[in-house]
Amino acid sequence: MCPILKGEETDSVCNAIKRISYPPECYRDRSGILKQISYPAIYGWDLKNKYFIMKKNSTIILLSLSVLILAISFNSCKQKPVQPFSFAFYNVENLFDTIDDPHTNDSSFLPGSKLHWNTKKYEHKLDNLSRVMSAIDSTGFPTLFGLSEVENINVLRDLINHGGLKKAHYSIIHKDSPDERGIDVALLYRKDIYTPVVTRFIRLTFPFEPNDRTRDIIYSKGVIAGKDTLHLFINHWMSRWGGQAETEPFRKFTGSLLKKITDSIFSVQPNANILIAGDLNDNPDDVSVSRNLDAKPVKKPLKKKTLYNLAYKKYKSGEGSLYYRGWDMFDQIIVSTAMLNGINKIKVNSPDQTVIKYDWMLYHPKKGPARPNRTAGSKYYGGYSDHLPVFIGMTAFE
Image 1 (cartoon, rainbow, N blue to C red):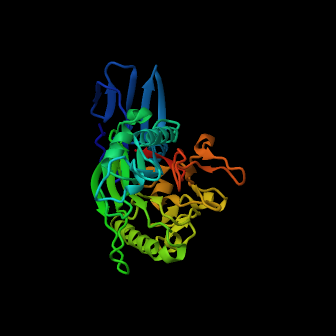
Image 2: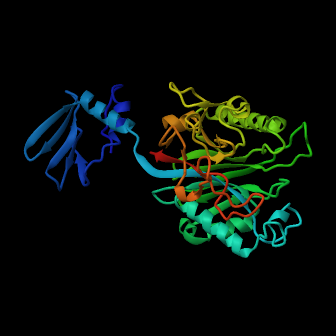
Image 3: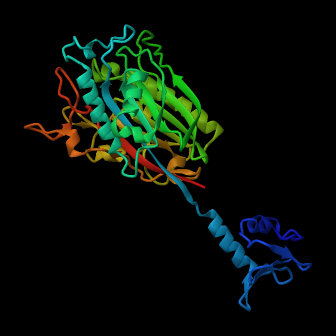
């Protein structure tokens, strides 16, 4: 209840008072004092002297109105965490089943292929991926999990129902894309924390090579813990196969397209929570990411309506998510300003993504550093993936 205070002094005060939890069974006398029937305490306002009166055990405590308002304001401005959650991305390296699909290029992953891909190897692949994905978040399973290089919905269903991943109770967002290799991106989510509201599959058509087909970008707009909206983009940009310079225009086009989309979101909601993640097949300082997408290193003061790359600092320090003649950080998590300062109820727990890199995930060559232990190349190796997963913890606030 809010005391009936008259005069221009009290609209904001009255609103603040509504936040005070009064004891039950109170009544207000003619002087505007709230009195409690069954408890030895009285709470109320001395309107003439602008004091808040609290009587308990025959002791009267007078709090000045200004002090009380200051206390209320301080407490009300403090954000209260209501839901920890997390995001991970993992390029799982060619998660194909053993069934021939005439609509995809899966010939390398069939029983009669050079790799002799069969049910035993497929089950082993699921074992390995399940082990990695279950070890990413020390508090449980990532709330949101972006994946790339999955063949179809069937392998995703097999994966989320395999081994320890069953406990996560993941739901799936996926659609077959026109990719020439027959691989797609997907989003797994825990529906007890994340509620998708809008889903779009962004088709990439390159004006300079209209017949080149690649993966869609998944766009999911949803609500975290019933609190605030998150705009999520899951990516797997065109690979460097055929040469970095020769394929760069495809990635630059994709970066520019994403920039236009996020700018349109910012135009409606300057404090939008935006998270872009995926295997971008470029490093954080390459043109497609740093200029076309305009994802910047995290540096204070933060600028409004800006995308910040949580992979940049780790990359510059020598870390990476895959190894080819040296470490590259193709797998990146990029967020908007609001997710760094928490102004819109969702905040990342760190300005840097974490590369998940356990020793048991690595291959140790005779020369050179340990690197991701992949499933197959020119021959079958039986490892996990040629990429390492990346991770960020977050918190939703009241």
